[in-house]
Image 1 (cartoon, rainbow, N blue to C red):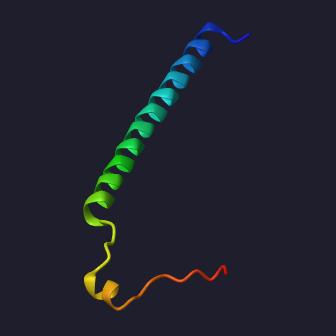
Image 2 (tube, rainbow, N blue to C red):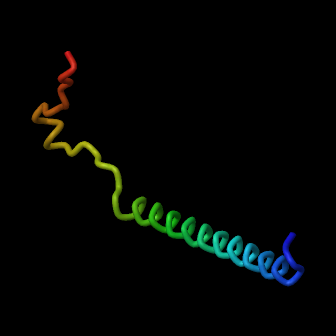
Length: 64
């Protein structure tokens, strides 16, 4: 059994640790959302350009 003072200090340190992990998780989620938004804005998908399509360029499967 732990003395009452030690038990109280251990409880506070556990609460501080859990609070820190929650804050860190929220910041990490915010950074991930920001990264997803930046990718969506600045890295749009490629479209087929008319000059490539007219030349008959296409991907050829090497699995055959």
